[in-house]
Amino acid sequence: TALGKKKISEELLPILGRIPNEIVKAHYLRQLATKLNVPEESIISQLKKLTFSLSLSVAPSVPVETRSSRRDVLEEYLFALALQGEEPEILLQRNVKTMIRLPALVRIIALLDQLLTANKAKKFNSQKLTKILPPELSEIFNNFYLIDFGEKIFDKKWLQQEKEKTLRELKKVDLQEKLKDLSLQIAHFEEQGKEQEVEELKAKFLNVSQQLGSMAKLL
Image (cartoon, rainbow, N blue to C red; front, side, top):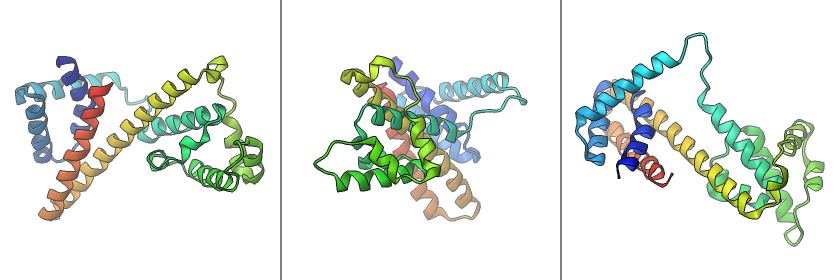
């Protein structure tokens, strides 16, 4: 649909626009145009509009949010939902654990895993977890309970929807970061003339961009 194409282009164009190598950038813009079944000129035109818009909207003196800050907020929000909603098991799911990057949260997950493994038959008890947390993690852990969800936290339907939405957003950020990293690697190996590595990275880039595009269709 037209709306689906719009969402996909909105997700991918900002990322493609940051690719430093113009040849690689042109390659992926061409592929995006083919994927969306639109003229390549339309994609290039939209990218130019986006670049111009960003240059006007971001003043040099205003700090731009870093790529990690969005991830940090989402990771901490997910922890608050899982712990206040008394469903910490979600944090131990493999697809969730691999997306958690904050070192302190990774350590908390490890201790949580240790606690739940030792108390399989018992219900999660936040006080028991607090007792085995080192001082530097205790304050971070306690902050998860300071987020005020009100009565909504007791609504299982709301809680499930909020967790799913947060996980989708976290997955999207994860894919966007992978694309940025891959584009830098491609540029690096192109400068070194390593064609095989470049082709392998291009295949990975295409795979990740398709995953991101599929997510945009679902939103």
